[in-house]
Image (cartoon, chains in turn red, cyan):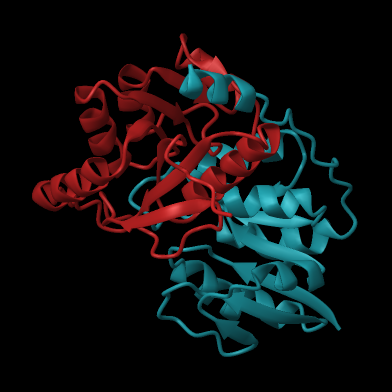
Length: 163
Length: 152
């Protein structure tokens, strides 16, 4: 007996390597444990080549800003091609982002397509704001902060507790 | 022999590794020093080292004390395991944000924060006698809201 997944909602999870990946993993595991009969499947997009078991399909992109030199890696054409590839073959409802910077590009494209954009701001910020956070605060439909101190900076954010 | 594990996460932190190897290790010969270097170029002369590991939790579990970069993923994982940690913000990175979490976690006395390498030996001496607070957090509670929003 086979089950069709055509009724599944598809959500694109965008995250960078390291802590961003760790947060996305905790988030999706929490979401899937809350909603075990859910009809959402998760496609992943990251600069990390390895992904998680819960990902139905994985796409690899490049880091946006080099952590040592600060050099920005726009690669606009490559990112746009990646986006077209993902969105033309999958009926995506929305995107969830845990940062960092390259997520902004995909969030902008998602907004242009009228998709839902959810951002979980990093668990590493308390009294300071991140480059990604400042932009995603204005761009996302739902902007969550994990540390309550962040509400001083992002007045209209939603406090979510920590992953 | 006690084990001291030094971890730098995904970005190298050669200045820390070099400092510990030359200035801290000689004062603590009762510890076995093990280093996780990422893509760092400096290889410590006294102790074992490797770049990355899929089994890093094993190193965490087996260590008595851990010195770590102030990456949030590393810090939270170690605090959740109940480990005693000294965190050192990595200011070699272009963004200096690691100080934010390091200071806030130290404010709650969950760990020891060392922003100057010169204080590392004293921090290591203190940590075994010092009583740190058990880590507590308000866990993430917005999963249902996110599912509802995506499926509405």
